[in-house]
Length: 128
Image (cartoon, rainbow, N blue to C red):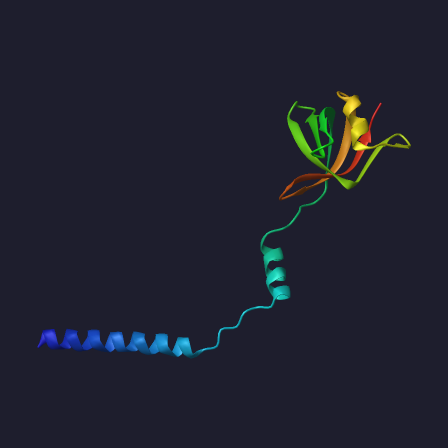
């Protein structure tokens, strides 16, 4: 008698699971449009963070890679991506990235935005 009860319960359970899966399969699949998907992704993973400022000395410049390495006050090197929009100034004079190559060991203040691709320099102000 117990065997028949368990067999009946097992059969009923399988039938119930089958019915639920068939009902779910009948529902239309809706995909969010690209604008909605982009908004959701932007909320989950920020593209960049709040801007920061770093003061240190220019350690190396690679104009071909658009890279500036600055050593902070504690000696830790920071790689900065320099874009075409990055403002580079020394006093009131505007400079190019290639001009910084000859200014190794000069103090600078870099205003940058941390991004997933790296720290992107917005402005570089040479001091002294």
